[in-house]
Length: 230
Ligand SMILES: Nc1ncnc2c1ncn2[C@@H]1O[C@H](COP(=O)(O)OP(=O)(O)OP(=O)(O)O)[C@@H](O)[C@H]1O
Ligand SMILES: [Mg+2]
Image (cartoon, rainbow, N blue to C red):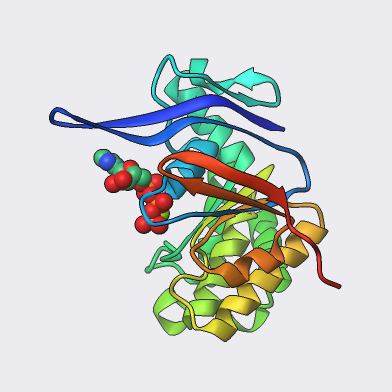
């Protein structure tokens, strides 16, 4: 589904060049649940943002193939279309719209996709049911707990049936129990067919995934299957 071939990301700060990603190659297949770990500054968010086409690799370094199309060759409008069609994002800070209630937040990506209103409401309700938020449809973000806000954010990320769900520290702001609920939810979504990549600092998170990738200094230093405990 996704192939990164020798991707690099350099930042220039005055005379200093930072190699946030250094010649990274990886393949993500349909149905995977990949956990990305590594020290602070090792390039995890950079890699996730490049995977989700929120950011592009440094030019003339390698290729990014999405279903065999090299997206590094595309223009801004095509990239935006690919982002909306293929990727769902979940962030540590939820990033909900404060002036919209739970239902309206989930409807936002459906609005971009120009679906009729009745269909948008129905689909948003179904998504919120899936994340067990049916009892809070009219609540605004500041009337929801952190875990509830993250469940709304996950429903919103799934609205356009993304090919790949990307999460950067999705449990970083949550208490352990709420964090575990979110991880169980991601695990359930993966079992139902959603391909997922999660960045985390938390070693416990790796027990939920199927594959663990370790980054260090912008390089993949290990990439292996996670033993599933029954
Ligand atoms: N916009 C930027 N300009 C310059 N340097 C940057 C920029 N974004 C990231 N970096 C640098 O690139 C490196 C990788 O950053 P990245 O955010 O990917 O790390 P991370 O692994 O996600 O860390 P953390 O666990 O702290 O979130 C870091 O050294 C960071 O300082
Ligand atoms: Mg980060």
